[in-house]
Picture 1 (cartoon, protein in one colour):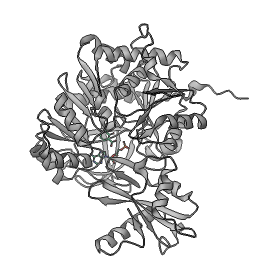
Picture 2 (spheres, rainbow, N blue to C red):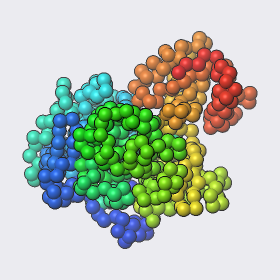
Picture 3 (spheres, helix red, strand yellow):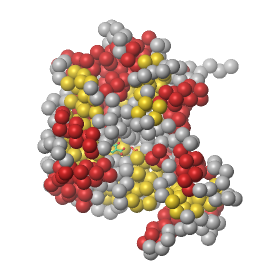
Picture 4 (spheres, rainbow, N blue to C red):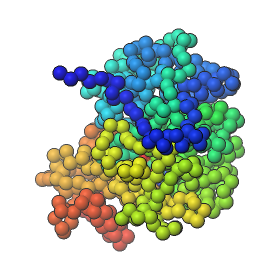
Length: 559
Ligand code: AMP
Ligand code: DBH
């Protein structure tokens, strides 16, 4: 009988020794840890406000005390250093309390988005062998306690559940804050340990888990805070869900805390909630995706709120059009900063003092002088300067491997350790990147990445679906929306019923196809003989051609 050692599944992230030495010698990796720097900030300015959300205002001393209390409480419950804990919280102070508590205990948060549902959560729980789940009682009309109950039924390895708010049958997070954390050391970790698992947007199939170390992530926080000019006087508004890598770390709430600034959490990204908080708290910087920026630009001229404190509006997650980019300063009175990043690592910023044209037209340049960039043609050869090609990268904060996923690792990384981003970019003479598009088959819907394959798999399990192909379609507001082409089996299902059914599979709402088009067959060539990729490209082209010709798109289209 074989006995599995639970510690063997503790995630790792390892760079070749020569690279690690170089990154340490350059001062990028300093052996700092999340638990320790929070203690340093709390010792240096205990009474400065760290986190504001709802009616709560926590000073650095309070956040530090809460982190220690939770660390002690988590460990007393039986969790052990290196265990994984699913964090499924909206933008509330408990999000920050919980992750800081986990860091301090040497436990590994696995970040889920509030929009994720049982199917995704089960996938993350299994993939990370999580032993605990922390969620809010309810948010945006969804009861996470019901999800917790279902998760426990499906994944017995999830032994502990803590709920922020009315805990019902589960343990209350609030009670853990009462644990005596006095004896807990500032950190249980080393710089090279994995600090957390971030979630990939998922280009093929289900999301992958991304192990990031203290050393590599703290390097991005330090440099991002510097590039974005953050300091103790900065007030960052978390409007996007802060589990996203962008508002988490570029510089996001973690970069703001690292710089000793103040984090204000908005429960919703809508302009009304955000504008009220900007006025009340004197917000200086925030991060948005392009569709949200568009809403802000539309509503700002008419608002009665004073937005005068805003200095920087960061926009990323999806391509920003130059026309919209141009409106930022005149309408919001703030400097635009474009941010092109990925949870796997590489982050590019336009710099605050760059000429307007660079800020408006490009997605910035890398954080680090040690970020290595390759732009290759389809045959893997470098393109001529200024030409578009596939972006590959490696560097001091770009991962070398996903967690426990050999097939994804074989696809996504070259033998010499470059990450294939899947993005098509060109480099300007100034060394800035312009994102041209994606080589892969995912849909970037308002910054949320959706894998075509994942949704096709759901559709294919419907009894009246013979075959399905999901493609992205340009959308004026969302950037891209999803369209599912379906060959029905027998009676054609109603599009509304199909969408409802997909929703019932327990997946995030943003993954439900926006549009459904029924077709009798896919291509004149036998569908099986052409690759899914070619098929999707073909269907997308047909749809766009039909739309351009302003003919009725196809029999039975529903949005
Ligand atoms: P994820 O894998 O979910 O972390 O998403 C990262 C991907 O989002 C990148 O590889 C790009 O495809 C896309 N992305 C992020 N920021 C930008 C941006 N500023 N412009 C265009 N695409 C972006
Ligand atoms: O889209 C992203 O994942 C992203 C965008 C901007 C990101 O991870 C980041 C900055 O760090």
